[in-house]
Amino acid sequence: MAKITYIAFDGTPYEIEARDGTSVMENAVRNGVPGIEAECGGACACATCHVYVDEAWVAATGEPEPMEEDMLDFAQDVQPNSRLSCQIRVKPELDGLVVRIPERQG
Ligand code: FES
Image (cartoon, rainbow, N blue to C red; front, side, top):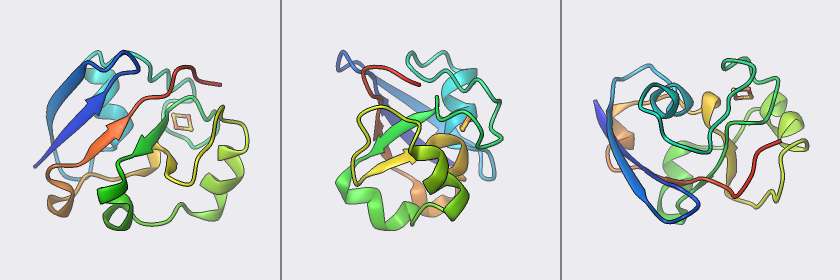
């Protein structure tokens, strides 16, 4: 398990206990966190699950795979800490992870 804090665009924090092996996107959708659309259901094919990883967690979450990099080109307002949340797997090392949700998706 890992506690993940999602910070919505309006600044509202959502703290969620996430199971290992699930994705950061899945946990947001299942818990009604606003701002994650995830139109493709986690197939790395839509870029509407875009999040900004808190700077302190960029190393722990790792680099995006090439396929994710390509898909990120379709996201809005991409920054160096941008990730597609369906491609971040929950693991114990990510306990405390903070991600911010952009103003809009797609
Ligand atoms: Fe579609 Fe992540 S849910 S790319």
